[in-house]
Each structure stands twice: as C-alpha cells, then as structure tokens.
Image 1 (cartoon, rainbow, N blue to C red):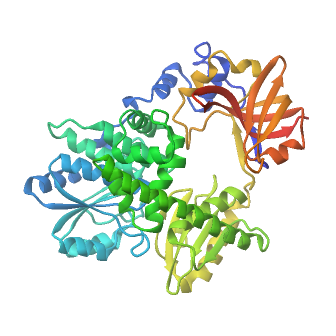
Image 2 (image 1 turned 135 degrees about the vertical axis):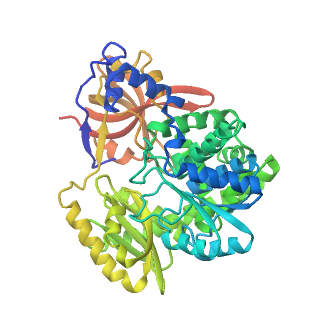
Image 3 (image 1 turned 45 degrees about the vertical axis):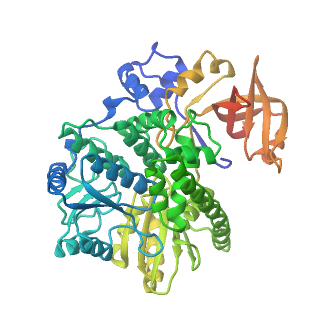
Length: 559
C-alpha cells in the first residue's frame, strides 16, 4: 500500500494479559479490545458462547407463529432472496431449513438486469397468483414499505428478514426481523443477511423436537458472511469459524466442484479462499445473468449435477473479470480527466448493472475516495457506491432520498436508483455533502500496524499462536508488524512481468525469507537498504512443503 500513512499501535499490554502470552501476542490481543485472559480465551476459541439467543431478535415470535401455521396448514411459501452471495446463501439456507420442517417452499431470486434489487410489487403479485400465501424475504425487504403494503392488498403475508439499515418507517409486514432496528434487543448488529436467516431457522427448530442440522447451515452462513464483508468479530466469528470447519471436512457437492475448478485444496480453505475464489464465482451468475445458477449449485445433491453448474459459473466469472477490467479502465479515464474531487462520480451508459459495484470498489481502493458509478439510462438510472472509513455513504444518500426511487446499503457500500432527469441535481447535492464531511479528513489510506518487532521475536511458536486469531477478514485483519533497519541480503524477481520479488532479509543475527507482490519496481530503487518493512507472517505452501515467510505489505527507506 504505497502512499499509506503508517499507524503503529502503542506498546500497551493489558495487565490482564501480562504473563499469560508472549509480549507480541498479548499486544495483538489488546489491540483487538481484549483486556483479560477470559476475554482472550473466548475470542480465540470462537465457539458457541459467542452465539446469542435468537429470541432476542425483534418480531421473532410472530414470525415463528406464522411459519408454524403455514407448515401445519400446508400453505405454499416463497423465500424471496437477493442476487449476491449473501442473498443466495441465505435463500439456500432458509429453503433447506423450512423444507426440513415440512414446509411447501419455493425460492425466488429476482433477475438483476430485468427486475433489480429487493422486493418488487409485480414479482409479489406473480407469487400470489401462483398460490403463494406467505413470502419470507432474506437479505432484503427492510426498506420495501410500499411494496409490502401493496402485497397485503392482494392477500400476501410478508415476513422480512434483513440486515440492512431500516428507514424510520418499517414495512407493514407480519414481522420485520433485523438486528439493526432501533428497538432491537439483539446484542450483535453485524450479522449478514444469511446470519439473520440462520437465527430464524435456529429459533424455528428450537420450538420443535427436531435437531438443528447446524453443519450445512453454518457452511452457508460462513460463505455469505465473508462474501458480504461483514466484520469477523462477535457472533460472526463463531459462524465463520465453525462453517469453515464443515467446508473443509464435508463440503456440499456444489462447493466441492467450485473448489476443484479453482484449484484450491480441500482441507486448506479459509476466509480468504471464500473472498477471492468461492464468492466471486457464486456472484458471477447474478452479475451477468441469473443468480439461480449459483443457488442451484448450492442445492445440488450430486457431483454430476454440480459439475455442469460449476462450469457455467466458471465461464461467467471469466466474463465478469473481462468486463470489470474494461469498465474500470473507462472509469479511470473519467476520474483522471480533471481534478480529483472528494467524491468520484462516474457515469457510463453501457456498464452492466452487475459490474457497477466492482468498478466503484476499484476506484475507491485506488484513489481513496468515496465513489459512485452510475449506469445512465433513458428514464431510470442505477448506481452502486463504495466508501472509505469515516464516511457513511448510506447516511449521505439518505439525505438525498427525496430524489431517489430506491436506495439502501451499509456504511461502506450502497446502491440506489433514480429518474435520469434528476441526475444533475443528485450529483451536485451528494458532491456537496461529501465535500463538507470530508473536509476534516485526511484522504490518505492508513496502514494500521499491530506492533514494532525485532526479527528475533518472531520465532518460538509465534506464528502458531497468531493462527488462532483466524478467521481473518473485515474487522480482524492478519496481524501486521513493522521491523526497522532491515538489510536485503539477496533477491530474485518473479512473475511473467517480473513485478514480484522474493527476498532474504536480515536484522541483527536473524535472517528471514520474504516475498513482495507487485512491488518489485519500487523496491529495487532502495536495495539493499536499510529499509523499514511492514509485513505479516504466512505459510508458503508449495510442492507439498510449508515454509514460513514474511509477506511484505509496504516499505520505506530507514531514516
């Protein structure tokens, strides 16, 4: 992360951890807000003690009562999901759970290109005409006030399960289960959509004599939670840690096919594997065609059924990569055509709706600015937004709500649609809001470093202890260290364009192997050092061997 400002945590070891762990490990635990040995043990265990009673969720009891009635009376039920990985996994989890309880249930995932996000009145009307009497939303619906009201008019009962930020007025549904509700007593607000779905299924099973088949449900919960970039703390830590165990030990046929096509190794899957390999493939169908391909893969019962679906997703993912590169290049041209403003506002008449968020994310990563990428169409345009720490993009959009048809999201990611005629006013208003709120922020990325370390402190089983902090991801990044006055003994270039570098580093009497990805050109200018290097520790698995090395994240000449 060249150009980032290094922020090294002060060397402050909580007294409750002193003597219980080596100094570096104790500091890392303290950096994560853990002050006592008991808190540290609970975090490292990541077990069911982090899971809360689902009965604390708002409206859980009326939801359970209505679902039990539907099951007992043989009503037809639809699960209405979203087309991203969180929504797909939530749909699969809810459908599977309800079927095991005896429900007559079908999935419904809208087509991104022809229907768009969220509950739609026409889709609900069609479900009612097909004999559906109860619709359960997953990962959507909390802002669909008018759509739920309309559905009541033609005889549908709606149960909303969602994790997005509600509007001041809730939909007039049978139940609205969302841990972010202002009146929620649930202790953990950061569940993904699939996490909320899991808690409802957990509650439903607890009211019966049937045992909850947690393993498959936790596998789905882990994938959706990581894919939606939810913080891997609190209850999410339990869901993902336990889900990864099942994913490695007994993956479903569909996920086993994805793993095989991706050349991953069963038994070695982690949260990063989900982020970079599994989730993009499940997302790919919904970005370009229909997300039901991803849903069907998750529900596949045999390897033969899964193989064809996984192959289709692999092709969709390759096309997604090609289109992303194309439209990122076009967006960068717009951004660089003039002064770079606090908000990157890009319009494109051709960018596929499923690619908008990827383009916005790339712009935000590169320029460290909030970004809005809009597909401009004749009457109604759609947009995807990404943001930086310290600027809540959804709250900013909320202040423009009078101009929008639909909107919703989280602090760092959101989407909206609006009449194209209102685009100029929207652009001006959101740009002014952003400029005012960012005026006091330093628009430079911050690299948060856990501790300054000497090379000789990195042995003695430290890596094994650090591994207990996994799963790593949002809110729980791999520990970063900085070591100063390091000398490069030798190096060699790697990659077809020689953009990577493998090095041997020394400090004092210690020597470490290291790798620096996409940094070779800039690193060569400062060799042999001395350098200050920021890195994490990782296992390099190659040809059946595992070697501990440093992964260099950033560097600077030593002062």
